[in-house]
Amino acid sequence: MKAVAPHDRPREKLQRLGAASLGDNELVAIVIGHGRANASALDLANTLLTGVGGLHGLARARPDDLLRIVGIGPARAAQVLAAVELGRRTLTRAGRQRVQVTSPRAVAELLLPQYGNRTVEQFGVVLLDTKRRVLRITVVSVGTLDSSIVHPREIFREATAAGAAALVLFHNHPSGDPEPSTEDVQLTRRLMAAGVLMGIDVIDHVILADVRYCSLREKGVI
Image 1 (cartoon, rainbow, N blue to C red):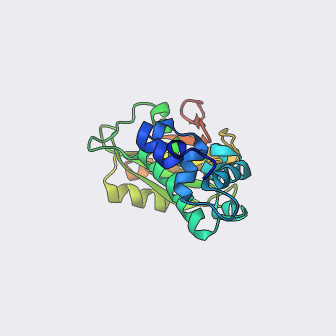
Image 2: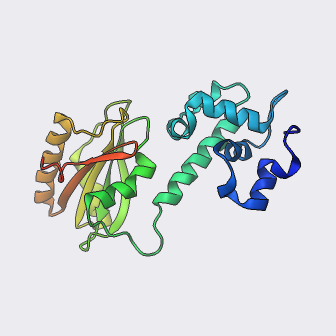
């Protein structure tokens, strides 16, 4: 970092102007901490961002993706991925007042930051009280690159344990296309029928893909 004027180095710049003033590479450099032989932390941050395809790629990166970059070992990879996950959680954790779900878009806005860009399929439920306020968000199944296995008993075990009156199903499509498959529609209808028997209303199934979503309720499929 010797080539950068002291007052323009990422840490000093953050202290002087605030985190919002820093570029993506400068923020990553701070997370990395220090460079390696013949490369500053900023150089390493630039190489990392180029290697994963920028911030969008970083949000989808796995440990192996980062470990391919010269200068990024297990400890630094863990630091970067932990920082990304913390960023996700700051966008999804509610305060003391529980979030009320009033529309499919509200569900998508709640879920997309944390689940929209996952590299493997995750299937979960948003559990709601009688006023459609969020009780809990739970992932019940994690699959491979393009599939997950979901059993109704797992869904409704979570719902009954939380005392939920209703729920919204959700899962992500790592492909980036939120359009439902035939299997998605069939599974949704099966879980809705199970919800009738359990007395728990399955009000929607929202499919997430990067920054887009598809609501089966909005689409008129269910």
